[in-house]
Image (cartoon, rainbow, N blue to C red; front, side, top):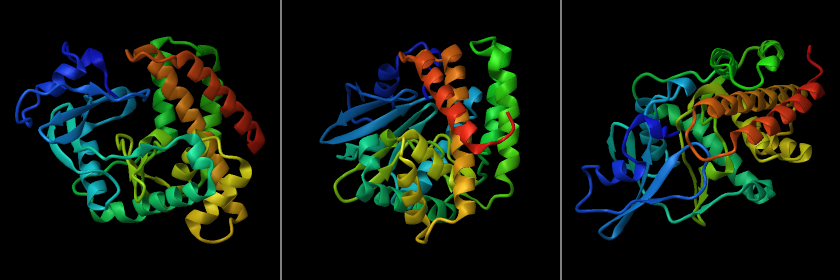
Length: 299
């Protein structure tokens, strides 16, 4: 996520001033996205993507960790190569590929490819990571967001106690987990298809978590049907879905929706990006409440 208030220069100016270019360049914004400032730069015969963003303490984003994760992801063949980095900027090779949509991920053949991509992330990334890594425990993330929203006196102050109780109930229901290295932000827009390979982008929230969170996050972000959710689990585990799988999945789906709701509430107050976070918050809150009601946990 790029916070434009962190520097008096525009992202375009910051990208153009990087020391890696062979001459003057003219960065062009990449369309789409609700959190990141990404630009395309042509330098000689090559194209690159520049990701501009400083640390974001409100969201627990540490760019040093993001860089290490991107390097490991490239070593796994999951993500493009990082060719240059400076404080607040990552430069990666441009991949000539189509960005997936939610409709793409709803197609069984694409969903199977994505489930294999997620499994590779979970199993292969630890072999390539160097240095300290982080735990992305979604319930602690939600607790911190709840405190941030409370302290900032933003919208929905009247529902924070309710959401705090439900976050605690979900954490209790989740029980013990087997941690794997997760992406934790599986929007369709973070996956590219070059016709042969899928590429996974935007690792700023990556960290150790339950595999069920990534699977539920993908399902929630792309509004999979209940039957498609079962198929996703079966593709990932290569076996029939078990009752305990479905319980863990549905618990983490609620947690994913709650995290997205609270993330958006924080963005409403602090982001300078041109996006209707208010409507996004309201939509995610409604979806969370419906999913939570289906679990039958304490209100």
